[in-house]
Length: 312
Image (cartoon, rainbow, N blue to C red; front, side, top):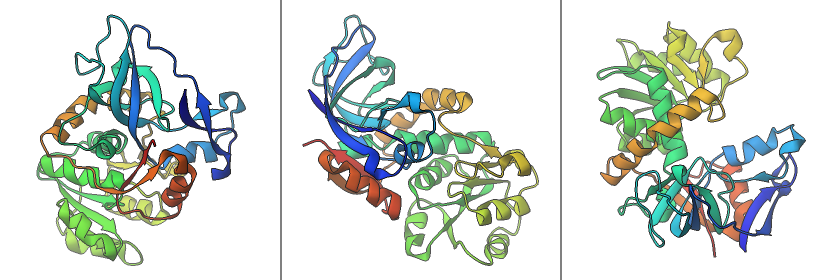
């Protein structure tokens, strides 16, 4: 039996609860993983908070994990090739990652880079694939200057690193307390708040070619619209409400086009991490039994890095 967290209803954090669940033996094309770290993302609670289709209940929580293979189906290889019991792996685009053990499709399982700890590996791909898609859909190229709203968050930090590798200059909004984090990954930090438009224009007198929004505020969208003429080069992962009116792009893992992109970019991002070119700052870990407290911390604060759940 495994401990796994589910949401029994839609609503606040009180609907999250642990249960004992039988882990099915892997069939051909499946792998069982003893989870050593479960990645945490705002999406873990947001889709529960805003859900309406009660036929989907209970909701399995968590999209990415790392651990070791505990069983593998007959005639099965993981996505990166091979795979044996005891191998260290990570998995992304799975359901129910807040677990001590789980059985998942082998196509979603990859060898864990040896230089990544389990908490880092469990938090690499949701933020990383989101960041990669933001850069891809805005068609940024070497030498471009872009504006990134929310540069010190998990997605923002991955954008900064991937943009630097691509030779793209990033002006990133953050609170002054997080300016050093933005600079650490190659960005030029600017404080959000009144006067942001003027500060961006001063920092980028030649203009910016694209805007990437990871916060969803009206300020972020208004400033982006004022600076970027081609609205196909403005993308948001948070401000969905205004997109139909203002004409900018939105992306999300549940969208088929986004899902396809994020699946095909996974191996590339893992290779970057293995080469030390993509890092995952970890702020804190929690025992799996404290998942509700960890979600409260994630939803109410700026943790300054990623969070992970560690099965006892």
